[in-house]
Image (tube, rainbow over all chains, first blue to last red; front, side):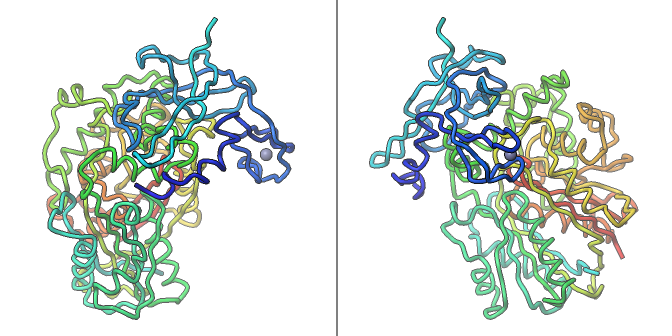
Length: 136
Length: 376
Ligand SMILES: [Zn+2]
């Protein structure tokens, strides 16, 4: 078990992004990022404002993972997706509350807070965003 | 000018009886004996020793076990591109006169892990740990997402990805140091188990232990053949796949290639590319300008990429069948190019080959290194 898995502050530092989609918007090129960075990865600007990203979006691409990482065996098989949020920004997240065969491109999804990683018996339980189909 | 004056390889595979140090020393000694020269610098290429073997500081570690305590030595890491990057930086030590002769040794010892979850976790250190791997992203899952994007964009069927693994296995039969020296049946590809949809096991290179070493020198002084590193190029892309606009392109490959080709009219007789997966192999040949976008499979199904075809690709069997000792792979590629252009790839020789290109790739196309190697 590696240090960064067990570390409380390593997860705590990312909580604004992982719990409430707190990201950044580059005031020079408009790129919207998650998490918020000090430097825009697209244009190099340091002029970044804090924004809360929309909780709804659609599935751009997905895979069903049958061969997991350590710490994710419980969820296997799980759907890992690239999601485009309503503001055009992109993030990677698991889909939840569906069976893997139901995942499809273009599916409308919304954010929920879920248990994401359990690091052994003594490790921390990390929560973060996952996305489920929009309930109509 | 920088010359390759000697090389040494271990077989790629499961070396249960050999540690990281045994492998590094075995390949290094072979390389040093093949040119019979002293070295004044050691550059180690490795990707995973910290997380897999609990050993870092590989410069000192290799110098110690090689009986070269005191020499300057360092480890270079760039995930799957570690080997290529190590050769590039070692070559700059020679051309800048910081060193006369450098030993570059790539080494990886990955089979001490027996559970796939553990090797997946180790490999996931090459992608975005906090925003991809944290969400359950494996390196293989990243390849799966790229494969899906490619299949959608170009309307390519899953079966069309079988041509690369089939050819790689066929080539590796003749390569003494290869990990998977057997032919593959097309039906085995079709029934291969899913790793991350749509990617299946036979799309992927096997992980293996191995070490490869090359000796670089300012003079063409090798007693068993010499090759010149004509030029090299490197480029990065975003560490995070989800930040990229088009998953079917890997711009780091074409930029590294362009940088290597800047001041030369080099024409490779063969290509040794980094086919971690069939999809990465396809995108690589497209980025190198060998196939149109979405049409890479034809290069492999038509026979053009065969060892005796007009555009030989991975005459040794590629990552898919020579095997993938992650951080060492790029040094294998350069050593293999040397053996080809000096006419000593016995059994897997591209006939008359005098020049070759190697391409190493780290992560999911986030770091690429190209070398152009010519026999002298
Ligand atoms: Zn910007």
